[in-house]
Image 1 (cartoon, one colour):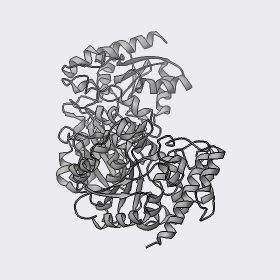
Image 2: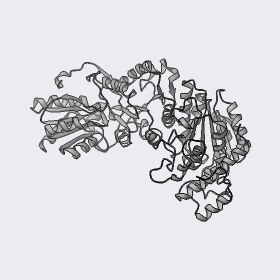
Image 3: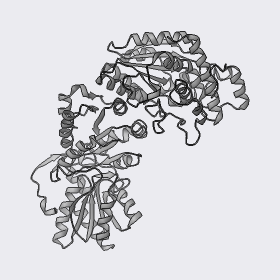
Image 4: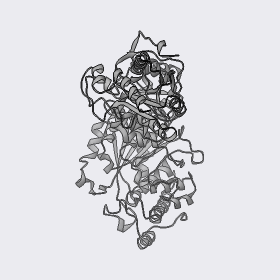
Length: 281
Length: 318
């Protein structure tokens, strides 16, 4: 098990990468990226088994991760690079012409670590179910993880998939919802309320866990608990309470930083709050 | 081979060609998996579902999820064949196909029955006439519209080993069986008849009507160069150009809107390399309606007589 302090150091560096990447092209989505940084750091740093030096699309014998809310690509790109999938310096090409680090993740540029394009919301859970079923057919006991935005849950396809996974006994799948109650037009509860989200998932036949997505210890503990619940005939979902913009004070407590990049002054202000632990790209 | 070689006595629906071939593929290759959105019987997927229950996924009436699952199943090396009606295989799930299959470069075979007017009595909600256009526009998508049971059988077998996403379009009605089972090649036109007066290029159910039209035209002294284009993308440019260079005029025939379908695909080839007069036998930018297949084909201008008159118009424009 990785030390919590090590994971927290990684998190701080990933957050620096995120604000710098988004600032560099004055484009991208910092809010949700910062909110999910601890989760992605724990997932890749502690939970998942993978071979970044020999990336294969099939991922046989490896745990798989699908980012369904593709707009928070900065946190995923930074996590992948810092996990050894591709050179850290390549983070500097984010959203620029001819980059492998497209605005939203894609397989089209052959960036190691990515197995599915995402950006148009609501599709990742279905894909993950397919990949999880393929693992079962292949006798592969590794797991499939996903991440979804809470606003994304307004897409109908999510609930088609939510219905299918328990019915098909997809029990090698751990989905996580980034529950920050923010979306582009405002609070999720105002734009289109999710109601009792736990009850919704439970009614569909999922086992539900909840955790604080800004507490590294809680994330690690909950992910291990979720893993211990796999293989029992049902899928698992973690409702992860997060704060959009986590780690940068002026980006927190509002939906305004969903898809807005910081200017030079704001970048400097953000970086002051985030310790450089592994060296900037 | 010429039009006189075709006097079929047997009829079968093209969808049965799909179902029978899928069952064979199931026996031959463990990577083949099937998915269906509550239309197993209509798609003739029962034999596959019954014999390979572990590799068959009933998704319920949830086509978007089915498409996403199919994309996911390729990760791990499966070759998924999805089955539902053409309308629900394309228009309903266009964005899922676009992002999760086409843009993601996934090896999914989207197999669609009940395409076009010949669906019959269910009417316009189900009679999609825009699907070829929708699928043609997606980068990297292969589009195949076979003409009878044999060709659908052969195409289903062939797409298994064709790397990349495929849209395979077939239909509901019982239709004459006339195509060779053993000479199907993706992307290669099938030359049915040699003639010097007019080229007729047909796809799907309209191939049989075009054979009948060519026989009638021959009685009037008009020799038809008849081509079956089953693979609308990538299209066989060479075969099209060789034919129009000989005849100097062209008719395209398809059970589809005149926008986006075979006619436009062929016109793009000829207008670029060898422009000739072209007449379009296709639905004139309309939705269909309830009725018997043969009555609908007449009402919407897709009958044998429509092909004959289009050929005469094309010749007159030379």
